[in-house]
Length: 142
Image (cartoon, rainbow, N blue to C red; front, side, top):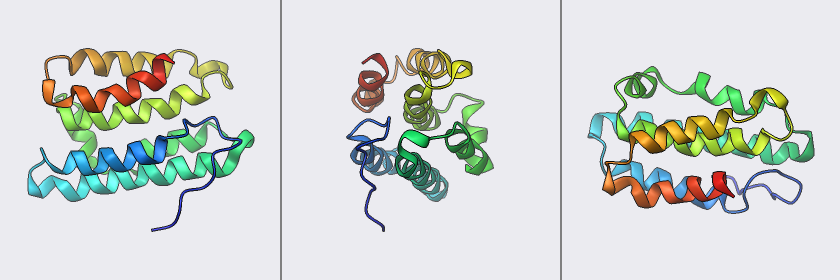
């Protein structure tokens, strides 16, 4: 695995890579064995997307954020429709990327925050996920 790029000129939170690796490890626990590969791949693609944003620094483009949902497997996307908690947790972390670009692109204003808010409300009854929701909540509210 390649090292993480520096975040000096990036809009990303300084602890994003540690948090994404923690998310990857956490998601393996509640998933059935058959889904673990799809979720590990989705998380790895989110890390790659994040690295792309980090490398762009101040020259980040919104397409760098929007490429991720197109690369995620159909299995993970189909888990969002029935509001499957691990899929929603994954998208909560993705919403942090959107929020980091909200101040640069007017058409993203409030979109990432609304996405996170909706996910947070849906996961409110899942105590086992609360700790993992703390990181994106802190980054989005701060």
